[in-house]
Amino acid sequence: MTHATEVSQGTVAASAQHVVKTYGSGDTEVHALRDVSIDFQAGQFTAIMGPSGSGKSTLMHCLAGLDNATSGVVRIGDVGLMGLSDKEVTRMRRDRIGFVFQAFNLVPTLTAKENITLPIDIAGRKLDEEWFDAIVGRLGLGDRLTHRPSELSGGQQQRVACARALVGKPDIIFGDEPTGNLDSRSSGEVLSILRAAVDEFSQTVVIVTHDPRAAAYADRVVFLADGQLVRELYSPSADDVFEVMRILGEGGEN
Ligand SMILES: Nc1ncnc2c1ncn2[C@@H]1O[C@H](COP(=O)(O)OP(=O)(O)OP(=O)(O)O)[C@@H](O)[C@H]1O
Image (cartoon, rainbow, N blue to C red; front, side):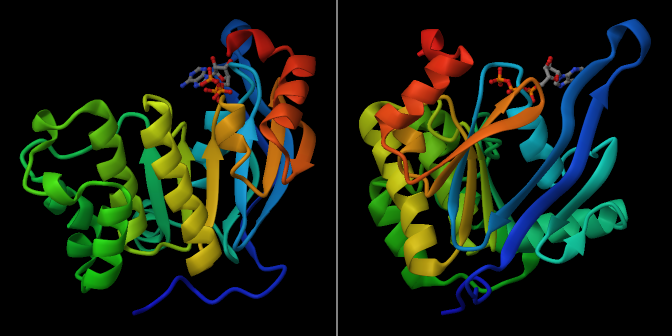
């Protein structure tokens, strides 16, 4: 089976350099990102945290090519997104990036299995059945594969979205609150499989989360406040994360 691109120590899977994102202009101007520079090492699991409105989703969307930075440089691997046409960005997303978002974006007319394999089918690639079975088994979706999204619970839909992001073994997986609506058991399954994607398949995972327990699965936790990077922790415990959140003024939300 083909694995994610082989990674060596120190390879950068994604990076933002001096990224500024400003929404609106004049009185309604919002500085969502103010000169953010960060590298995401390949084969690492990073969690982005910070108070509501601090710019987490904006950073992730800029990194994933879903939104354009106002200025600065964003790279996936060694490819700068700014120089690419829309078509090239779309292809880059399709071939190298997996997404797990809170709005699962499942196709209502397709079964769970069809939704999971959709990116591979669109790309005209061959499904790695062994990896598919492993993901589906681990996410507890084996008996739900013929169901349509409307016949699945929110948690099951989220796990289908997670399986879809993983099945093509993209180099990098972005998750915007991937465990946002899940109970603690489903949440643990999703986080464990993201962890396994990193540990066993050298994929790179970047998630936005408000949950210190989710962040504790990460190798590195970075904190944004008011559009700037303000702290980072390596292999923290949930308590370490909670303490920084408290200092940054987010402790009360959770
Ligand atoms: N499309 C938009 N137009 C105008 N302002 C926006 C837009 N998207 C985000 N913003 C603003 O940019 C800032 C950063 O938003 P962002 O969604 O990145 O924050 P966040 O840290 O992900 O927040 P949350 O934890 O609440 O999801 C906020 O002040 C937000 O209101």
